[in-house]
Image (cartoon, rainbow, N blue to C red; front, top):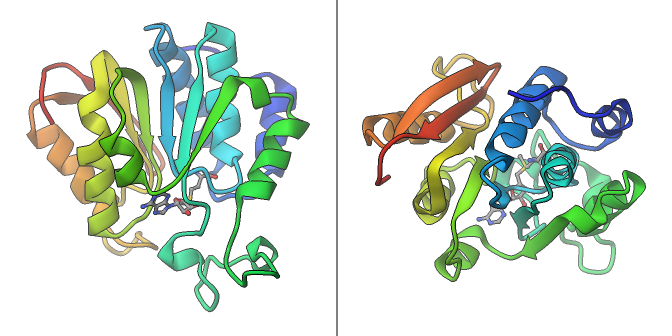
Length: 216
Ligand SMILES: C[S@@+](CC[C@H](N)C(=O)[O-])C[C@H]1O[C@@H](n2cnc3c(N)ncnc32)[C@H](O)[C@@H]1O
């Protein structure tokens, strides 16, 4: 695993809107740095305002690869008005809908990482259906319903190269700990049960798995 991100990138991560704690961010960065050595792109599902994207982008910059990040930027269920994780400043006053794309772009710009990231704006399964090349890492942090988490796994995990990494966020084995449902945990169990992935590390609710066989 690689070293920590540059102090200014870690500071940008801590200042960015988002939900990922620092220990999980450092584990994500280490996984991204290791996977990037395959010389293939890193892909995130669930950009939100770019907090975790900063770490993938910094690891991508160091390895001269590209970080890809997919989001429709309209927010997950639990981020909608009236729900616990809603941030009113993410609502576009003209449409009345959430739009995290402008904040994401400012986050990346401020950190000087724009040129290392390609933002894919759209629904994850729709983008996955037209995706056709191998990836060094897939980080699943999109919608937390079974429908969304399963679609993210089925859409993107097939593209993970041999030796590449599958990283899943918000894996809560104990239902008492979960805050947005246990769908990511069920995806994690499915990936292990497939025989295609082997666990590498667990940090907080972040799980890092390596592709050690074909399939999903
Ligand atoms: C938990 S947030 C991501 C947080 C981000 N990774 C971070 O650490 O700052 C989940 C994001 O997934 C996006 N999302 C949910 N379902 C999606 C789908 N089906 N396709 C694309 N994006 C989706 C939401 O718009 C939201 O921005």
